[in-house]
Image (cartoon, rainbow, N blue to C red; front, side, top):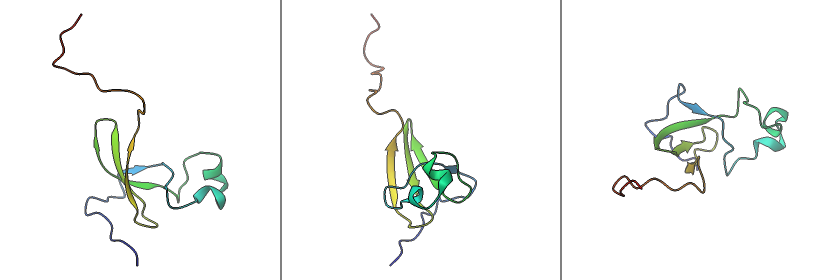
Length: 81
């Protein structure tokens, strides 16, 4: 059974990120070369700073991805040195 697409899914908001479920690189030379493919893109549903929320139009899997792993957010309440 295929999951439904998020109501925020919009063809105009795309991201070229590998889906953790689909293995596009095994069948697509463009994806295997880590280039932007016309077919294998993901819906960019929303973001929360560097964290993007995505959904694959092929399998409908939804996930979040931190685009700045290892970077901690600045605490605006801390005094400047």
